[in-house]
Image 1 (tube, rainbow, N blue to C red):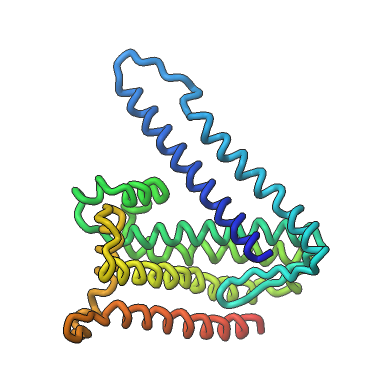
Image 2: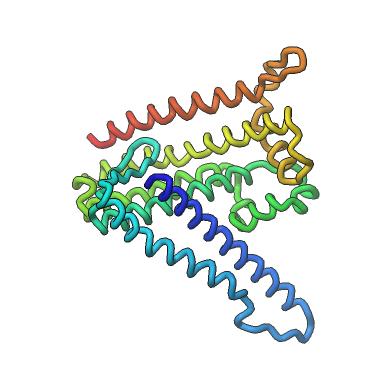
Amino acid sequence: MGILDLTLSVLAVLLWANWQMEVSASQKKRVTDLGHVGRTISHNAEPASSWKTMLLLMAILFLRPFIYWQIGMGIDWNAMLKFGAVSIPFRSDNLLHMTLFSLAGFIQLLLIFYSWILFLGLMKYGDNVNEKNLLHKSIHVFTGPILKWPVVFRVLLPGLITIPLWIIFCLILEKANIFPVQTFKSIFCESLVMGLCAYLPWCHLMALLIFIYILNSYFYLTSSPIWNYLHSFTHRILTPLYFLKLQIYKIDFTPVAGMAIVFLIYENGTKALSVLFTYALR
């Protein structure tokens, strides 16, 4: 069931991303058409495929709780959502619980997706190269004008979004008898901890990027603009470690050291945030 849930969640996020790209492409086409003198623009300029994508996404989100409810009751499935500092169980024999589990799981993965996109948009490598890069164009589609905001605010954005969402989520869980009733002070303190947890997925992304960087360094993966973009991005992340001169003969241990640091940050960060969350419950 865990694999099924992850598969459906990833599919739902990919459908959302595809829908957003289709809508963005439609809007650009509409602006281009408006530039032609005397051209009549239809109000239905948005392609029908974008609506089909959204309808498919809505169908998955609507049917998924019923699938979990029916199958979960039969196998006594222990549904669990992990948020870094805390794990929340949901009863698979309760349709309301499965609905909240399904919706929260989708929103969590969607926020992680946007968090990754935001992280990839933190650094720039030269406007002429970026403008022609498909990955950079995709980042602009998903983030919009956010990339023009100050870097400090962009770094704080995942935490600032997570804090109010966690407060709303806690209140909903209390109404559904999943969470015990708490004071607003406790919920607010928990939300601050969860705001810090919003940055843990960046460790997963950095580990993945460093792994790709290692493969691209020792095994040629083709000269794709996307690989070059990710390679340059990861090299910028590892730049402080290159001053340590971790090269032995022709073997460069800098990426390995970077991977180890990322895992240490994630493991110790998760433990520290779990302690803070427990303290916030008091």
